[in-house]
Length: 306
Image 1 (cartoon, rainbow, N blue to C red):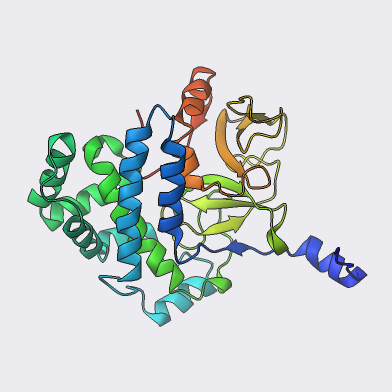
Image 2: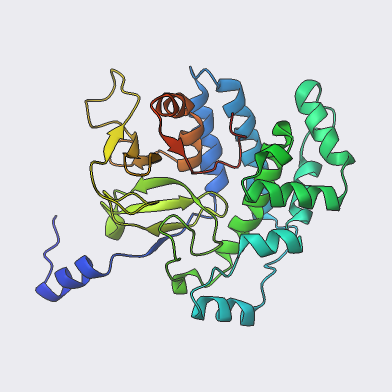
């Protein structure tokens, strides 16, 4: 049955789309399931399955948080009233409340792991809080050269679990848009990917998914989120026999003006798509776009570039 909107409702819907789409409490369990599904037949299948294991641990941490929300209510109110991200990553990563999440994550991981995985975990276990904090600061600052590549997924997993848990404890409905389209209103981190949603009041709207806390905020479609140009945008995908042209569930919005791109999931074409999982599973598209001269500005905290 279709719903008939009155004129006033039509105007309100057109002018005021819902600004936020918050992640579910079982975000990491859903992400793990998607990664396990995408791993089948993927050249990076083993890596996707490793990240799925990490996601299961992230879900355990969110279900039983090792630490509470580190931002007092007064600080939350001040930030929100001034249009600032109340979970500002650049300050909280230095203050260090996320370090207990990293320690808890390590306690959940196999202490008997061998090979490259065992070496990475041992390096983390042998590090102190000062070193761990330095790695976290570098990772969120995009300074990947300052973080051993093998440690990135584990540090990224701890950071994501902490910030996602804190986000769900915020009065997030009061959040305001950030200065940049591609900046998360909750924590100030850059977007990782876009999601064009397909249900209810969010149907047909594009939301950008935060690379850190998984908050999603509305940004109009057909506009480069970096330079805000709408001129000559094109959409690239790794087409295969399962999808008709233009119906691929994942496409990159490429801007010739600033030579950047951002991947987007179209849930009407694959309702089970998940931004981080589908991003990792489509690295072949990143390689192709890099060869075509486009630059990726969106981080994925579970994988070091290159």
